[in-house]
Length: 426
Image 1 (cartoon, one colour):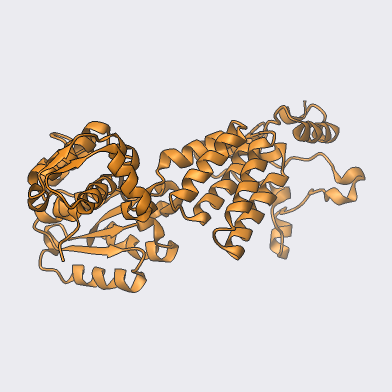
Image 2 (spheres, one colour; image 1 turned 180 degrees about the horizontal axis):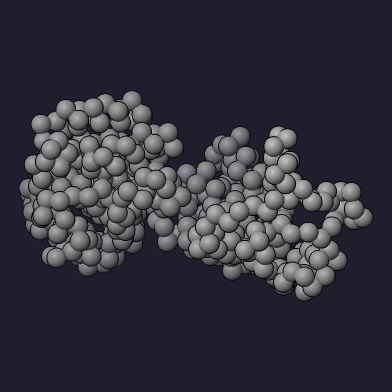
């Protein structure tokens, strides 16, 4: 059985690679690294069909080092440890160690990623990870800090056209069919910047034609894809620009746009759990304290999708989407925690005031731990003024209420408690 066109055309060196010039073009960072042979661990992040696996394959072809491949969907801690043991026993260990390519690394859970840490840190393996998910959310911080991150982009029109012409001019099977690309707009539109999808579409259209030469037109592409919509890798339809547009439409209070992008993800075969997780994030980041029920509903939508499955799961997702989009917005909690983290990073571990410390032992009590602490419930209104911040940060201020009805009530209560002593209560 003949290999798929996308596999037959997969380049074996960077000279034949189309796109991602900022990474693999002449003088670009990845190309310099590979040419020098001094490879550092890195993660490739980008939409499907942008060349992540191909780049790993070129590196495997070019460098004389043991090269292992794992797919995070079908591999676990056991397989990772087996590869690490093989790498340790490799005769080339002293010359840079083995290279481990993990496709879809975002699908590894924390324990699976933890099993990589020591080997990467000690140089037993050089890790190349590939992911379509934001590594900031899906890759544990210790592993991410040990890797460079390179972002791949969806292919531009010129890149896609070059791929098409390379295919009909270089592939031995396609050359037999004498293909004429009379129109390409439909193929480019359906590909969505995905090289593999583009080549799948071309192969699908050509195989449907019985006559030679084959004339490719937009009408033929549309007709063929409608007959077999799964043939062009529907699982890769959603790109990061779509989830970005979805979240920004919710943030911008446009329920129509939010539902449109939700429909695009649904039709593209996106994982419902991925959409539901992003709704929970948006409920806290963008709606926040302006409507605290948003987080409850978003979380309920996630639970509902997990319980009822697909396709009915689209309904609670749509309900949560419209609810979030039409809710008043506030990012005060989001900004507050970011401000607090920035201050902690700048000021370090300031000591906890003695009256706030725990005092489970007699010695701690004798040292003044918990001495002077006032139990709020013993006072009228269940509130009493006292210092809760470190001595050196007594005037820190992170959270500021925003202009919406819910936070106006919070601000009023804070003013009742603190008077003008706190910026958020003034």
